Image (tube, rainbow, N blue to C red; front, side, top):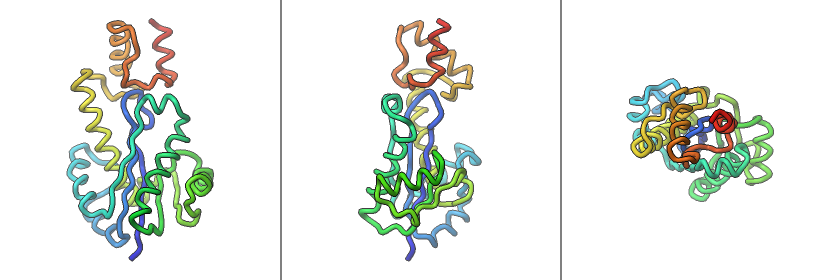
Amino acid sequence: MEIIAGIDEAGRGPLIGDMFMAIIVMERDRLVLLKELGVKDSKKLSKNRREILFPQIVLNSLIVSVARATPNQIDRENLNTLELNMACKLIKTVSKLHTINAIYIDAFSEPETLKIALNKNCGIPKDALIIKYNADSEFLIVSAASIIAKTLRDTHIALLKKFYGEFGSGYPSDHRTILWIKHYLKEYNEIPPIVRRSWRTINKILSQL
């Protein structure tokens, strides 16, 4: 029985909150079931639909494992290096339990460069890696990983809002997010701990105060 894995992340670009990366390990013949369930790129599904699919993906997978990076970690490390290390850790963890024949990854940097890095730094055979931009739209196993990562990221953001109030989407392009950060800075005289300080948007906000 051929066993495959898919990796995708959620929360790479926002100013606020953790980034999540998920790996799904599954028998290849289970992909038919994913298609029947309506699994697709998480960005093409509603929040409610992702939440419905989440337990179905878990139940039909051999392994689901997740890594997360806090704003502090993201500020301290190069983002591509951080994601590479997260992917390595996830692959090594699941490979202890199953022999994986192919690993599909939604590229977070140039695919061939990433393939070489995973081979060199993590010992993963290059011929076992299928790395493409927008792999979450092309491969169901990556789509499933994107749903897991996105659902966990959404749950994380909802929890943060219970403590910090409404801050919009958390993206630099959202005026609600920028306004919330400005109000927090004025009230507490510090950058919110859930914000990624290394993003250029923060320097722009600070220069305006």
